[in-house]
Amino acid sequence: MNRETPRASGSQGAGAEKSPSGFYDAAFLHFRSGRVEAAEQHCRQALLRDPKHADSLHLLGLIRASANRLSEAIDLIAEAIRVDPTVPDYFSNLGTLLQRLDRLEEALKSYDLALKLKPDLVDVWIRLGDLLRRQQRNYGSMPSRGRRAACRDKRKLHGDCWR
Image (cartoon, rainbow, N blue to C red; front, side):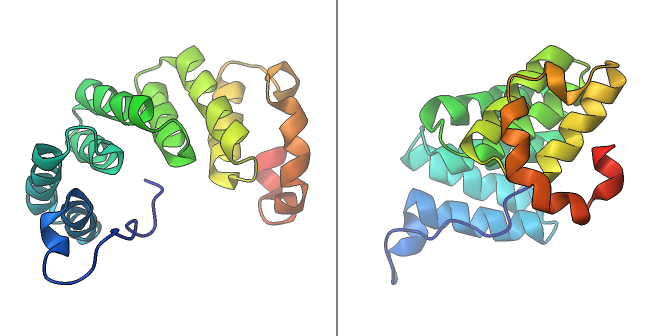
């Protein structure tokens, strides 16, 4: 969904692939290449070594989402958020999954939390706009409405999405 590159593992060399971060990095690359089963196996290896490895919990949630197992995906991403509530991608992806299940108020809160962490996430603003349009609401009804100013420069790139 959002994460473009794996997080750098803290260790280098021959032992790096045996750390949770090393397994996560491999899982991420497999997932990006469409090798979902291999990605899941690597996530599981990471979580065996560290059951609270937030990136692996999140990625396993994305893997579940790709298999349309949305309730499991939501649970895994919510656990990643409990472990590390500072990653906007976790909230963004959680919001997307909640929206797919028509849990719109929860999705709204999740998008808002993502924007509190990183106000210039254009894709979250677009999804938020789509959600508000479905609810026939506007940005003025959002708790994060003051953070819209941080995205003004992005309007030029995505003008139609801001109307």
